[in-house]
Structure formats: C-alpha cells, structure tokens
Length: 261
Image (cartoon, rainbow, N blue to C red; front, side):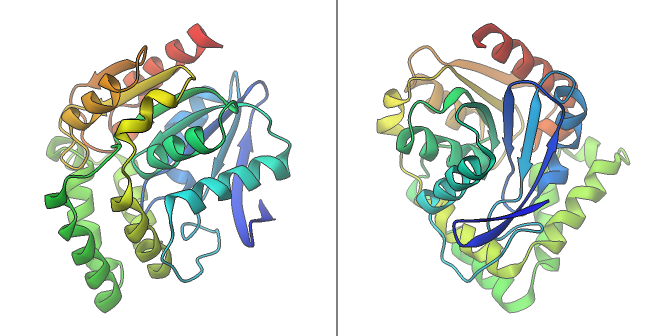
C-alpha cells in the first residue's frame, strides 16, 4: 500500500491485529528485510513495516536527506494511519531514525528497540561514507552489493544458502541511487550520545557479536548512556542480526516488549 505523506509516496504494509509494532529497516533495504519478524509478531501485534524515503517502493527524491527529516517522515506516516503510540524496532539506519524520533517526538514510543546501530560515528569512520556516495554515483548499486553482504552476514551464513541472503542482495541492488546517496549523507551526521539520557521509554539495545559496521562497543556506548536500558549481544550474527539469528532476535524483542507493554 502507498500513502502520500510529507510530500512523498510512502510504501507500507500492515499485518495482524493488536498493539502497534513498527519496524524500520537499514540502509539499502526495504520491508522484505523484516520477513522473519512479520511472521512471528503479526500473531500478537499490528505490525507496520514501511520503506524509508529513497528505498523500496517509496519515493526517492534527490537528497541530501537528514535524520530529522526521516523522523518527520515516520511521524507523518503515523498521523496518516492514526497511530498515537507504538513499539518501535529499528535496525542500523532504522535505529538512528528511532533515536532521532524519540528525542523529537517524546511520548509516542511505548518501547524502543535499537538493533545494530550507533548514536555517533568517530571521525575515522566518516570517509567511507563519501566513498560509497562516489561509487554509487559513478557505477550504480551493483558494485556495492558484495561488500555490503560481506559486512551484513557472517561468512558461514552467506555460504548456507539461506534465501534471505539473496532477498537482501536484491533489495540492495534495487535501491534507488538517489535514495542511497541521500541517506549516506544523513547517517554519518548522527551525534546523539550525550542526549540519550533524555529518552524516557524502555529501551532494548541489540547487536550481533560479529557486526563490523556498528560493533558491540557502539551498542555498549548507547546502553551506558541510557539509564535502565537493556543490552543483548547475539552470537553468530553480523549486522543484519534480525535475519541471521531470527529466533534469538525475536525472542529478545518479544520478552522485552511483553515486560513493558
């Protein structure tokens, strides 16, 4: 389904009935990233998945984008769908949008799950983002696929033949270049560590133990700056921990939400 929100067409899906549970995907992915979570959580929740600006079937206007703007997109979608409160699960970029949203629009998130994400980047992590922008500008998304898969999944999982690896590869490949570049401008600007204590809703921080992009030390930094937050490190998982270890990921989120519902 599509709806006009915040001057773009936003693609979204809704599954199940119950309290609202919203999933926000990573860079260069779309709603299909959450297939293992939709299957599990739609039994007890009203699950909303949406394609972030510049991704999937949503509009991809020229950038650069900002995390504030991406949070505004989510707020506009909530208003259009009549969502006054929800549980939010965001991975990587989706976790950055979640942090930004929680600070900008307090009181809407009943719980916040931040998976494989960061609240800031050190200076040495910034140049690769410009490299990605230049590569996508010059050659499109195809050359980006192998490196992303290598960072997003452990080698044993990539070699396992799991169908979701091919699904994610296709999602990367089909991401509009303008959307990818727009978000590559937004992501490295995140700098919220010193404000995390202002987020009052219960928060779960999840990270794959082998995540090279937003490694466990970044998750620990978020956890340490959010009093009362919880931290779960998932073994045998890299960046897309929700896809590589869905049972463990789902169990951690389900137990956390049920405890705070």
